[in-house]
Image (cartoon, rainbow, N blue to C red; front, side, top):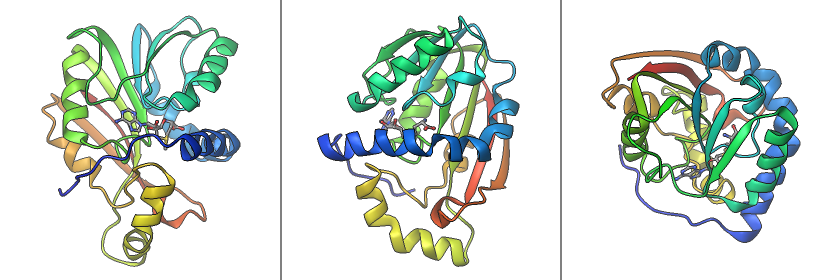
Length: 213
Ligand SMILES: C[S@@+](CC[C@H](N)C(=O)[O-])C[C@H]1O[C@@H](n2cnc3c(N)ncnc32)[C@H](O)[C@@H]1O
């Protein structure tokens, strides 16, 4: 699993990414809504969302839910706070990386992330942090685009990997994220692969699932 290198948030690309995901949120959500409803029901109590972005997942949580948003990119924060306020979510933004979360051990009922483990520098360390902050029996819910099996999509993923990583601030098109999750020491792991039907070919192969601590 060769994944090395750090890309700091860039002031121009950081803003562009926030604007891009804001503009695309309806399109993305239309394709992911069924998976989000499945993995996020029921999610309540204390929730930590890693890489919360502009907050497209908050609408799947009951109003009043306490959410700690682990979001190191400051250019997402304004939209994120606005989204949470509009939905009645009790949000705390934590501007730290998922590799070093400033929450106590076993203090969270649900950890959530969508399209984040593709981007973090060290997915194994982020998953150690997920495991650490979840209470025993707590759930980790995730949707990620992943490396495709050998074939046309895999070739496209490899072809665009460098410009894609530059544009989307560290995002790898060909990471085997399911392998990282299975190796992270959860009591049970449930992963479903699906086809993200879209013209964004490098992100067609996706997984959605839950893992129980
Ligand atoms: C592709 S965006 C997805 C945003 C949001 N989850 C969504 O589904 O729209 C990737 C997100 O991961 C965040 N991110 C990148 N590196 C991170 C890290 N090391 N720890 C936590 N979040 C990170 C980015 O700032 C960005 O919000």
